[in-house]
Length: 94
Image 1 (cartoon, helix red, strand yellow):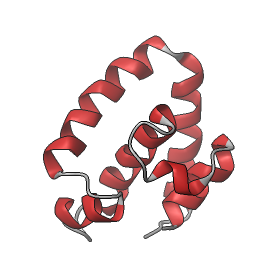
Image 2: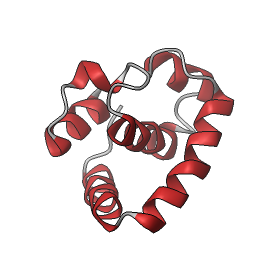
Image 3: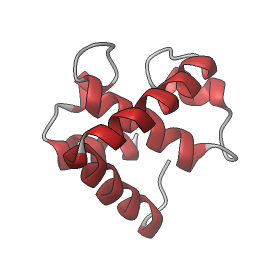
C-alpha cells in the first residue's frame, strides 16, 4: 500500500512491521489514521482494516482517539503526522 510505503520511508520503520500489532506502535497508529483519513469514501473501513492486517472498523476509531491524545503530548509525533499528511494531500494514494 502506498501510504504504508510513505510512512515506512519517512519514519525509518520496515514496512512489514507497520502491519503487525505491537511492532512499531506509533508508526502503525499514524498509518492507521492516515489510511482512515485518505481512503474513507473510496474504500470501506472494513477493507481498510483488512489491508492493515485484520484491524476492525472499531479499532480504527479507537486508534483515532488514542492518537489525538498522543499528538497532544508528543510534539515530534505531531510533526511526523503533519508532514505525512501534507504528503498525502499533494499525492493522493491508495
